[in-house]
Image 1 (cartoon, rainbow, N blue to C red):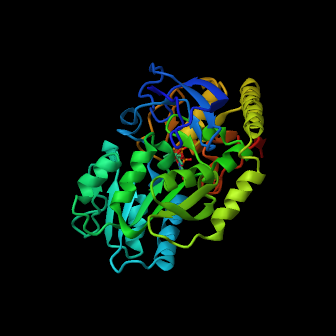
Image 2 (tube, rainbow, N blue to C red):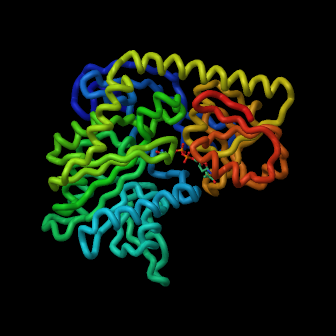
Length: 411
Ligand code: JHZ
């Protein structure tokens, strides 16, 4: 574990700690037995008072976090649809190259690349460090759908090794969904992107937006994998340092509200969306320390409300289950001090998560059929970002739902 002393974007040592959520185990290190011992690490968030990047005070080694990863992006139809739309939109907006090369960093189970393939992209490449996800090509050689994947972390050295020194044709699009915030040496990562991009190539990164995290109390999305919490302003700074610029930004509802940035070393015209978002960040108080202090108070209030709600249900003998053993849900249970007996079990459709137990709390993770078998009176939506999809899957259920975020609600 490394202690952060300087901002990972601008190097400043003016780091102001505004949130302390205690010491918790790693959210995706699922237990194989209910009472397994595990290591705990602090969760403290610091604001860089120079460039306004929020970041964790400690960095757990990426090999520990990502070498075996139980999260599979393709479990969610909402996410697949989101990736499909991205593929269609890019083809229409940027017909840069006749035979575009699309690279996906942290390609997970190939969810995004397979959607790109379905809409007609043929030259595709993934980078995925997890052994259980990236050690074989996606798709199959027999039916011609195989997509190559480099089973390694992405960075400058990997980028040079794979593209080679002669530079050849680089990537038309490099996509990084939900990985930028996970990278400690973000400067090395951007240098790797720059090396792999074609001259007019575009880097497209998507990540949950700190403005939403603050205003919608999404403190459960703060955990060891997420080292940085992004605003546009520090990101602009980052790319400028590497001779690139962000020329467009979009907001997307995925994962509770994400931003998608478009950056390039080519001089694309700057879209109005960039200045609009920078102005809004300022008027929303996202460059004021007081906003973060208020957020910390809200976090402790919502966390206490959630604990009280589950405590009351338990003491009145109600049967409670949860849906979605998401990393954020597991983190929330630990932050709020939820006891194992408050939640009977958590349903998750990811086979890699089933028959395991949540870190910290030791709650069993079970397959979907258990809902019908156990008849819960309350279901806690731990993956509240997929509320619509999860509720639709339980169309027959007539009990109550508990949604923890932004305020605890029961309906
Ligand atoms: P979900 C992940 O966090 C991981 P998590 C990562 N760290 C990241 O950056 C963020 O996303 C953005 C299950 N589920 O997506 C699957 C069903 O069982 O909210 C997941 O375990 N059935 C890279 O883990 C969980 O819920 C379904 O139909 O907090 C959702 O996890 C659906 C839709 C989901 O992210």
